[in-house]
Length: 226
Image 1 (tube, rainbow, N blue to C red):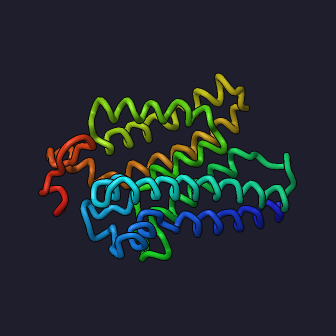
Image 2 (image 1 turned 90 degrees about the horizontal axis):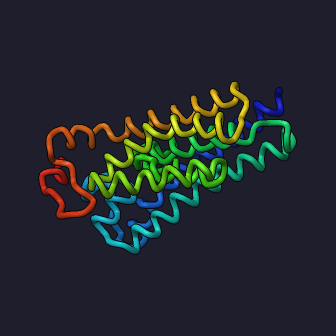
């Protein structure tokens, strides 16, 4: 039990600190010598980087945010393998917890005054390592909603709502995961979803007011000043 606590504490710290390395902030500072949080929607994320600085900074942000989520999960699994022992713990549970900590780091980065992005890319990267089947379904789902709605926020929120439902259905009915573990996995995913939806609260307000920017189309100046 002590080994699990030690491994858990180490993985939590590692994941949070890695998550706090905000790719958008780093890329924009290195390439443009500016703070992404002072431009556009003020969000330190992929969409705002693309809108304000173009494709190259956005691509580097994409790679960085996906990479740090993957590395957080892999390092956490390595820590558990070394301290607890391979096969003596549930790999997916460790991955989900590491992912939540990485997302918290991304949203509330210790290096940047606890003001970061919304965590969508980081949450997606976790699935690449621990649940590729869910990843293979939820990414096309996100893309379809984006194409239909033309809003990144709508696609992100929809994917966040669908995420725990899909996780339970796939783990229990397709992957034959034990019911108790299935419930644990779904609960951890639900925590992630709540975080992601909460971080889109201003987008929800703008959607209600009709001032949210569409992904395909011109920016609304009133939105950028909010």
